[in-house]
Image 1 (cartoon, rainbow, N blue to C red):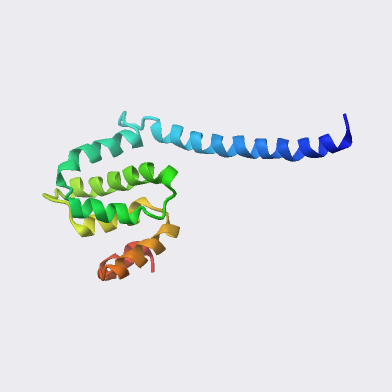
Image 2 (image 1 turned 60 degrees about the horizontal axis):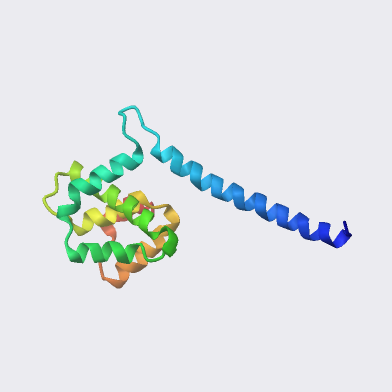
Amino acid sequence: MPGWVIWIMIPWFLFMVWFFATGGYFMFRKFLRAMPKEDGKSALDWQDHYIDKTSHLWSEEQLHLLEELVQPVPQLFRDPARRTIAGKIGELAVKEEADRMREDLIIRGYILATPKRDHKWLIKTLEKKKIDMSPYQGLLGR
């Protein structure tokens, strides 16, 4: 085998190891979320439960706000991110026995469901919409 073929195969092999490791990591995370907890339901089951229980509370305007908030997420991951955020918002709405979805529930749910690096987009969006962020400073950790 010529030496130049080996120099092509080594980076290809390293790329494939990295590619499979990355895919395996994300599949394993999904697998862990689907594992039942002590109560017999997984995190995904609870997420779907809260979405189903609160789906009638959402108005068009609030769905539009949620859609605006998930815009920075790449298209491939946008649907799972939207469901995760909506599940957390639904959980807050059920715990507070809300009769309709409110802007503060959506913002708090977004903050609790997303990593801290995504809060910059939330702050920018809220400033653009001229929404007071002072009630959420404790959750944002600012």
